Every structure is written in structure tokens, then in C-alpha cells.
Length: 640
Image 1 (cartoon, one colour):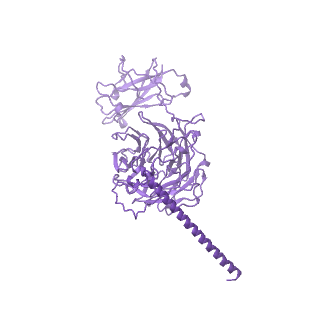
Image 2 (cartoon, one colour):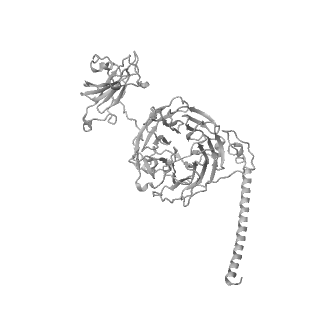
Image 3 (spheres, one colour):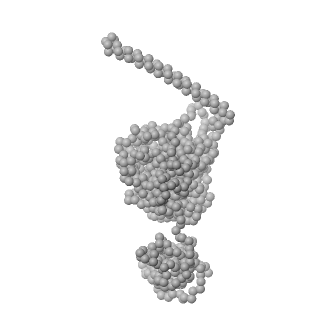
């Protein structure tokens, strides 16, 4: 551990002995005291920890030899204290080698008062030829008596957070979804989507693509004959529930189409093959589907043709086509909080923020992660961007970016060297990011704050089985009474296992700090309003009285008569006809209500005419039935 220190005169001489071989003379300096933290510095004898006297710090300053450039000392924690190693790599900027006249940085070891501290020093010198095997000198040991020192009070080292003790727990086996044949398609998708009513999982299907839609209450073993949504002619790659209607789901497939489905209120009783609407515009497979967070019936799709399309599902129209902003395969797309912008990651290693209505690139960061493997990005509630990716040495990384300054990341952390793509899930209410790696058996979670280092590790949930995919429940579907702040649906090879993230609390009362008002199912804007340039944050609801969902309304598609409307072709990135131009809706929003009244009268007349026609048809069919019954009676009586 590095600590702040103050230099004082020290009459003790420079130590002779084995340290001279390192080419770095060793001196002692006085430093500040640091409090004992059993989490950071575990005791070799836990039973005696409470009987130890107050602790002190012995600072050791090792001045590097000016003739050996590039050498630095690294401090690592050991069971007895600290370990110093003279590393070959140059130090980070915060601990760089001091130049002549500068204050050297201090490495400290810890021990109880009136006891000896043992500091093991391993030297790695950038010498040519190297000293010993691999440039390593045999370890040397330095012992010193601390003596009595005056204690100094310091603040706690561990950062305080209400989410510090969040723990994950899988549900019991009888609450899992068994015997689900999860898709084996090679695509970095979550393969799973969840809302407060249904669980959807992309499954293996012969002769096309299909996904399973289950009511959340249908746990246990799923029959192989259970009906699926099977309208695609190619494998399904991505699915997403509409945030404003829990019975509407969109899917993208290798057959180059996007389909939107209406699920019956009580679930499927027969295979669903007819979608509400089919959206065709991509020339290659569609791998990304995501709904607008605040505007009703606005859907974004991205395909392997490097094109992003934005649709008005309510009219089956293409609103915007962005086909010149990505030179290579798009890895993922994420909307910001109010849906005015979205960010994308691409195979060219660039992170982009795009304004869809203008069709322009707001900002771009090249080589956000230098590795060649897929990276992903999500918008946070405050407008910052969180990314996951790989380093040049294929180590998995997390990074936090400020869109106003894309030059350097605000924070960058390396996790491990696994090769599975990291899938980030963000909770805007708690500012916690959950990171799941495909093929991993763990979920890591981090808290994002405004204080350095910005990304704070909280904990890791670990299980035995690797995950094929992952879905997350919206906040309004959680159990508030159990202090549940997140619920994940982990896909195994043939099973879906819910995992509950809980904050341990003793009180049974509603926890205001854990459940601020969250985004509800009501759309803040209509599609036409969003196209006209309006933005709005999500409409929030309170979870205090336990969320009660309102009755869902069916999705109705009103197709325009494209034969009677002759619209000019729109340029790439420009709005499409109808819903893309605010002038197209002036008749809807005309003041005075005269046009609206005339329209209502016309609709009423159409309904009455249709009703009269149906009555005439029923009467005609009734007469025909009577005639047929008379003929049948004569045949049976032998009269005919």
C-alpha cells in the first residue's frame, strides 16, 4: 500500500549488506500512520488479532540507481506484511521513478508495535545480460524493530456504500425452467428477454427460427411440445420486449426480417406463426433489436449489412436509415436515457455516439479498446458511456467515458484474460453495472460514482455452470418486500435459472434508498412527437405500494395507402415519409378540433354502415339455413 508521508531527518546510516547488490541504496524515512484493516491485511493468527496493540507503519524508501533506467519498485500484499519487487516495466504515472531533487515515493509495511517487521525484497533489474535466472536476484530479508510510536487517527480505508453487501442467490430447482433447448447459434446476443409477465428464450428449431415465451409462473419442466413463436425462416438472433406493452415482443433473424408479435394475455396455447407486422429493409441478417425507451412504437434494428434502421411499428414505416456511419459489423446499440441519442460499437474498434433524427455522428472514439474481440457499450443515466472490451493482450477490460471528452477514459480496469464477450447490464436507479461474460460462471457488479476511481467493485456472484446467455428483469417486476434490487435469468445448456440480487436489511418496511421512482410502462411520447424533435425522460412510478400493472392494449398497425401517396425518395439519414415529417401530422394536431370532429363523425358513419351490412348478411344466412333445413327434412321423409 502506498501512503502519504513527510520527510524528516534520520540519523541512521544507509544499510549495507545484500541490498547493495540491487544497485539501489536503502534508507529509512518517517511516515504517517495507517489504521489496521483486517480485510486488506489479514492476520496470520486470527485468534490473536483482537489482542494486538495499536499498529504502526514502517516506511521503506528505495531510491533507484540512476544508471538503471526503467526499473521501479512494486509493492504487493503478503500474509505477513508487504513485498517489494523491482519490476522491469516502467511504473504508472502516480508512482514513477523520482528524478534528482524530487521526493521519492514510499512503500510501507505493517506490523504490531514493539515487534520486528520482515520485508522480503525481490529484485528484477533490466540488465543485459540479466542477473541470475530471468534477471532475478535471490530474495533478501531486512529486519528492523519498530519501537513505540505515537498513533495517528485516520479515516476508514473501505469505501462506504449501501450496495457493498449485495449478494446473489439462485432460486430453488422447482422455481427454474427445465428442459429448454437454448439456441446454439454463434452470435453474441443475450438469447433471453424478460418482463414482469413473460420470459422469452431463443431455442433450437428445425426448418427456421423460433423462441419460447413462458409465463413467469410456469416453472419446472417444459414440455417439448410446448408452443413457440416460429414465424421466421432463419434462426432468431435477438429478441426484445416492448417497454410500453408487456405483451409485445420484437425479433430479428438471419432471414433479414424484423417481426413484431402480440402474445396472448395468458400465454401461448398454440404455435404463433403470424406476426402483427413484418419489417423488411435489411439485406443481411438482423442481429440487434432494441426499443426506444420513451417513444411508443419506435423500434431500432441493426444488421450485418452495417445499416441501422429505425421503424414506426404502429404504421409499419421506416423512419430513418443510417447506412454510411459504420464501415464494419455493428456489435451493439444502446439508447440514452431520453432516447435522443444512441451509442454503438463496431468491429473497427470505434465507439460512436449518433443523433438518429439528424443522421449525424455526434462524437467518435477510435480504438476505445485495442483488442480485436467484440466490445459493447451502454449509456448511463448521467450521459456517460460504460464499455467492455479487450486489450491488445486479450485481457478483458471495463472503461468509463465522458462524451464531452473522448480523448482518455475516466476509468479503465482490467478483469482477467478469459475470451468470452462481456455483457453489461445497467440499473439507472442504483447506478450499479452488472457484468456477465458468455461462457463464464460468474456475475461481477460495480457501482458507478462521481468520485475517482469512478468504477467501484462491489462483489462477484459465482456458480458452477457456465452461462449461455442472460436476461434481466425490469425494476417494476422485482419483489420490493425482500429488498431485491436485481433479478437475472441465467441460461444453461438446457435450463433457465433465476438469480436474485438482494441487499440484506433487517427491516420489513419499504426501503426508500433502494427503490427510488423507476421507469414505468407508460410511454412519454408518441412516435410522431419524437420524430418532430421532442424529447422526454421516462414517466416514473413509485414501487412503494407494490406495482400493479394496468391493462395492456393491443398493438394495432395502421398501414398507409402507399399507392395513393406519392412521396419522393428520402436521402440516407433523412426522415421517411409520413411519420418523419412534422407537417404530416398537422391535421392531427389542428387547433379548434373541427377536423378532429369531422373525422370522428366519418368513422362513426363507417361503423354504422358496416353494422348494417353485417345485419343483412346474418339475415341472409339465416334464411339460407332455413331453406336447407326444409330440404333436409323432405329428404329424410322421402318426399324428395
